[in-house]
Image 1 (tube, rainbow, N blue to C red):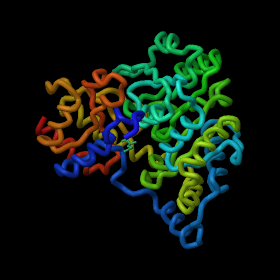
Image 2 (image 1 turned 120 degrees about the vertical axis):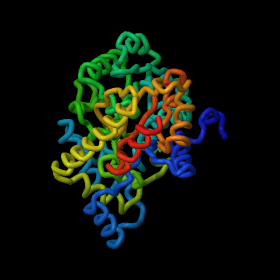
Image 3 (image 1 turned 90 degrees about the vertical axis):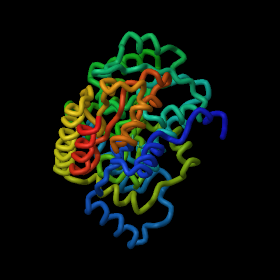
Length: 380
Ligand code: GLN
């Protein structure tokens, strides 16, 4: 393997899902729903295939999807964007992240991450030869240490990468935090990359897009996807919204990473994004019920549960059970209890910072969540 990827192993999500299968354990690890996406979206994909929408799509997206993304973005952020010049369809948000980083970051450029961070940010920054600086967010509320951030941003900084609502903590960046980041970006002429794939899974606070903070539109790439909102994580439809001068860079990377994204799925995605607001309300209501089952169960089982405002994840502290770190706790949980969770130490530059924590997901049907909770209450 190339040097720039030497330190990365099989992703923790793949490792844990494989262990779930091997031990017949209930999988509350990798974040994928064990229920299907809505029929009206699946039907659109079938119709698009039958209608012959099966050759390469336009590189930056089929026009109907670019427009649907622009309209949705306007509803969500109030910002009017040009679907032809400022919206790029990618193969999942993971590709939007890669295209953004590879298209806009030079080797040696410094990028700031907030730990714990989603694993692909670090790996892709490493592929781009970027220098990573990370600011650690601590429980219980994972708020930004503002002085530390202020000291970290210098003339060397090229970009700040945020994820709100944040995987794996469930933290949502507050308006004050976003304004603080915005002030630093403007002051030091820094770009912002914002992964907002969980924006529709905001339960305890209003989601705020970084791009909507004054001064930020012209320096922000906002990334999102269909997977979480429509329970279609296998479709791999994502996108990046950014002003034309930044879109140019990320499109150049996208052109040579994947060139284009699955044509029929893009047509179906366009229909999905036209769903009425009641769809999103239903989604949030269903997830809130699931979240209550998991959070109450984890508390009853004896975990210290940290508040999660958004995403379908919850972070807990496992130290009441006496294990030295997250890996050994998760091994015990799989083998002796029959439940899989994610050990989050890989989401830190210094793994020790995550050793007391474990991430659970509640994107599973209620029966599965109840069964997992019962196992933990009885066997932990
Ligand atoms: N985003 C999902 C999670 O955090 C997993 C994605 C993946 O497996 N790479 O669980």
